[in-house]
Length: 358
Image (cartoon, rainbow, N blue to C red):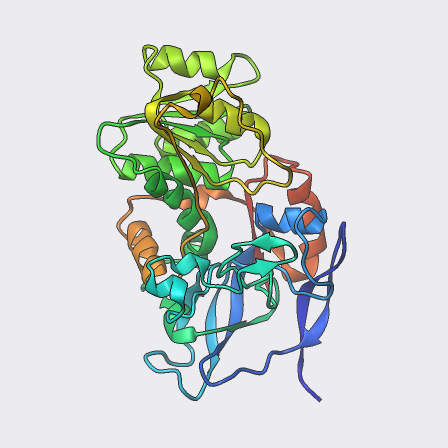
């Protein structure tokens, strides 16, 4: 009989429970890692609420930090006992998408009516990281050794939150001297703020209404913080930019309202970089879109994965260019993950990210 492990399992909408499953059997190109720290993502809450469909019985989670327990027979360049992370997106390295330079989109193409879910497999199409053990496919492409001296919590944001947030700034093509507005300062928005600063933006305007998040936003690189509960954010951003609008607007929430605001603050020829996961159809207002004549770019992004992306992000952490530890506000044992979901889904007690340890 296969040995068992604890895992957070999707049962039905509004029910993710801790239960037991067999420890995965690995193939020749896979690795089994023993999870030492993981976390809950906003996308997991979409799954919990039934807004993003996954198979019943699936283990949730896509942000693993752990230790290699077992390597597939064909895996080279790694050793058992090594500390590693794997990105939330796990490309194969040899698909058409990978060879076209868009490895995030390496996937089956269509799932549950969605197209382009790409290489997001953990907690989506295969069992995920909120468990004691995790099977990592295509291990040589996706495992990245954790540098000496970095703690689990220092690298916990790399698999998804930091990679996604930074990619918001990268996809918007932020340049030296740019003005950037970031709508929502949750974990991804905070990392987008930090990414814009790293890429050279000199006026970064963060939009939120939660006081602790606005405080952290300044630490992550925001020059101005706009409280949308007290002022009209579009009017305030236009005032701060002397009526020019911003070069890049980053939408990091996945709501119609924030998407519209982002569109309305763009300068002519500006870029809207969309990171939010949307759960309803978007409408593009005619006036904000300038009837399609504004030379605007609207760019969507799926979190970049793979070991080289993870190495670069961990180098950013190791060089002290970013300290994402402030994003971890709560800590739970895996045994208490249902409580962690309740806290995170309801955004109580100033939660940003939770660290889950088996």
